[in-house]
Image 1 (cartoon, one colour):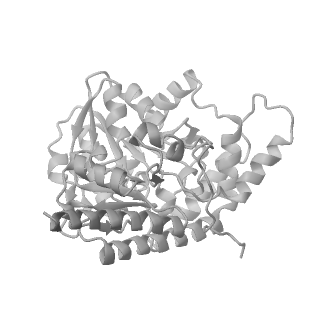
Image 2 (image 1 turned 180 degrees about the vertical axis):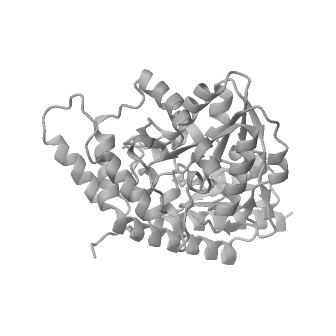
Length: 398
C-alpha cells in the first residue's frame, strides 16, 4: 500500500487559488479560514503530477492529438466503478461542466424557453440559464423528516409538454444525496413524456461515501439513455480543477449528432494539451488514492457531525451520501440571512458558501468543504463554536 497522506497543511495563499486569494474580493476581508470553493486542500496525486512533468520534458507544447488511451481509460473507469458500458463514440471532451451546461442550453433551447432546476442546487444552474436568456423554472426538492432531500414528482409531472432542458445534480450538490435507481428511472419517465433533455451533472459521481454506489442517470432505463447528456470529470475526485478535463457522454445518436456537431463546429471538443494527460493518469492509476482520500473525507465528516452535535447548539451537520461538501443546517440559531453570514464571516472568520446562494430553499444553511487536513477543519469548527457562543453570551447580557 502506498503512503498517501492527507494531513499535510499546504499554504495555498499566493498560488492564485480562488479559495484563498479572492477572499477580500468575495467576503470583504482576507483573514478568513477558507472552506467554500469546492476544491480540496490535499496535494494533487503524485501519479498525475508525474504524468504532467513527463510531458514537460518535451520542449514543444504544440497542437496535440487526442491520446489513443483517452477513451479506453474513461470506459474502463466507468465500467469498473459504476457498471456503465460506454461506447467510444459517446464521449467528447468539453471545456468545463458549467460551460457545457451553457452549450446545451444554446443548442437545445431558444431565448425565453424553460430550463428546469430543482433547488436548493448548485447555483450556476440558475445563473448560466438566466445569463443565456432562458427562463428558470424551479421545481424545488422536498425536505423530508429525515432532513434528506427528495424529488417532488407531483410538481415534476405538472410540467407542461413541449420540451426544454432539465438540469440534474447527480449526486446532489449541496445536499449530498445519491439518487436511487428508482428515483432516477421515474424522473426519466416524466422527462421523456414532457420532451425534456436531461443534463446530468455527475462531477461528484466518483465520491460516493459509506460504501454507497452512484447510479449514472443514463443507465437507469432506455428512456434515460434517449434523453440524457451526462457530464463527468476527474477534477473533484483528484483535485485537478485547474486542469480542465471534463467530458460528456451522450448515448442517443440524435442528441449526440446535434450536440457534438455543434461542439465540432466551434472546436469546443478539442482539449488543451494537459487535459487528456491528467485524465488518463487519474483513471489508470487513481483507484487506491481515491479510496484512501474518501476514507479521510469520511473521517472528517464524522468529526464535523460529532463536533457540531456536541459543541454548537443550533447547527446540525447533515451527513452526505457523496462528496466532501457538508450541508450545515443553521436554522436552529434563529438568524436571518445577513446575520448568519455576518456570524460566519465577521465573528467566526471563516469563509463558507451561504445556503441562499443555492436558492431560497437554502435559507438558514451554510455549505462547508471538509476536504482539508483535519487540523484545519478543527480550527474552522472551533471558530464557529466560539462565534455561536458569543451570540449566547450577548443574549445573556441583555
